[in-house]
Length: 259
Image (cartoon, rainbow, N blue to C red; front, side, top):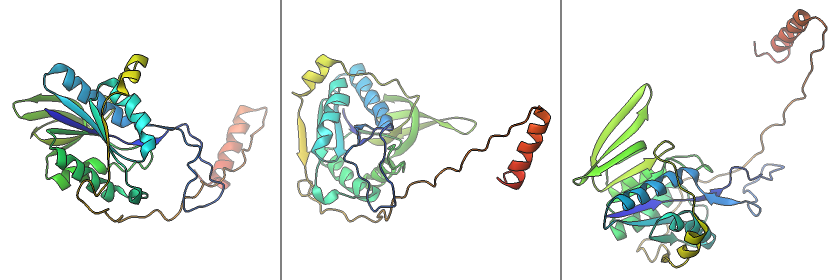
């Protein structure tokens, strides 16, 4: 069985963004980059499937520059993935979700995987589109936001949380799934395994290598803008709590206009 886990390197959620004024691009030079947290659930699930059976091979697949290699090594190969494929093409800079999905679909189709796992979304753009778009482009069944997975006899059973309950879905393989928190508890890489991960194969390809032209972006970000500055805090002072409450209510009604 061949499993692909599509991952993304994203800025750490604690990274501070320097954006004093509206700009067409963000200054990302000081960003600390990590594996997208939702993708860690997909990686862990793939590795657990590998550990539970025989003849299972797990490949981490990503679109990005050479700087993504360290993340792949530490957070994918060191925790059990067997190899990695990096689609690194300078022409993909600024690619939108549709373009990224087109490129990923070409890489996945080339190697014919039985199961493709994604995180439900990336924490940088928060779009949640890539897994669904890839499934559509490959013509494969898709189940989103899964919290439990069972495999057997050429099909899968996936559990997903819905409003007010749970939904159990069956689908045939191959299939595309998006994973969310609650599916498992991702493991941490050990130092010895990080050292060993450097010996695992890591293939770098371009769009030309995949036999496709660089897809044009359908969406372009026009501008980033900082949030409006917060207003000054006003402290209500009064010896009598009842009087303070009346004054607070007046301010919320007449000045803040929230009640």
